[in-house]
Image (cartoon, rainbow, N blue to C red; front, side):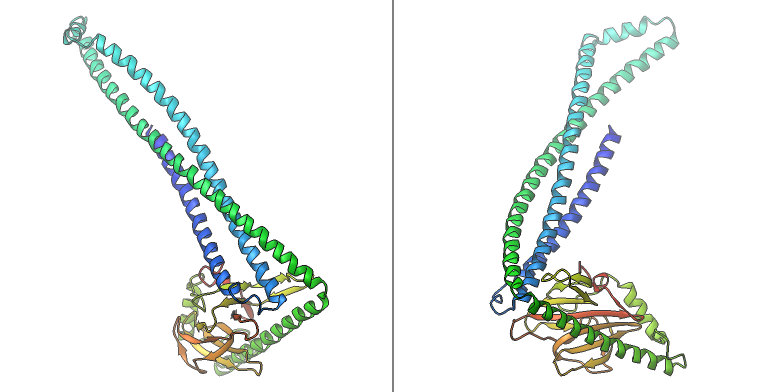
Length: 399
């Protein structure tokens, strides 16, 4: 019985942990959806280009699909828990029934021979002292076993009651998830229809929009190449100063730089966001354009949609390595953290200067807001050893 309860408890703990992890992920996605609605879909639709609206809607559909997928996983896990509980309840009821029948027979038997005189006669009728001693032990063991059976019935009855309570809660939670999923699927259908309408309107002049996409990609690639050149020059300068080969792909680090780089590495996955509020509109890596799936869009970092005038902050302590202020107004700040570089692009204002020491979460500027669309987008990159890194691996909860 003890083993049964231990196994039941461990199983419940594992299932509860899995359910909690899914619930946490669901809460994160729901929060992302709220931010997305505020930042991308509130009072800005008419100002945005068709291209931006399709991108926003495509992203929203993806987030909604993720929410439905997580909710389905929660429902399936609950279904398995409910089935397991029902099996445990059936098994426990059968064992409880058998225990009660055995206990009832034992009580009847005890009642028939309950008189002290019967016990005395049972002992006196022994043929020798050894037999009398064994009979006395038997009487004690029988009484203890009877108490044990009664206690086992009590424990199993409580366990059965708890399982029944859990089952009621689980069924209620499952129905709630089903209702939430039904609403999410209805919203998804509406969004897919909106997406189809926009795509159909674009198809009439597809060449125009594909040209815009390619032009934006070309401009982004150009900026990233300029940034890479600036970083390579800084690496060569640091190596020359340290008396090393200027052709090295890595910085010549001082003892202080090494400690800073090690601290940056140890905080992987825990770094704060470069803005307090935002959603990742474009993720790291190569993705297909929602306008024309044959066109690949390469992103060396992430593009974060945020509030108008949102303040930008350093994700870790370091030194401002370079400030870039091109004619197109896409101001950029590069901050060095040992051999890591964090890059903040598309700023309207800059609060720091070259060579400044900055702390984690220190404000370094303000995100530029597009006057035509009303969008405020921060481009954020992480760079090390000649390669751009995936910010989602470094920033906390940037899934």
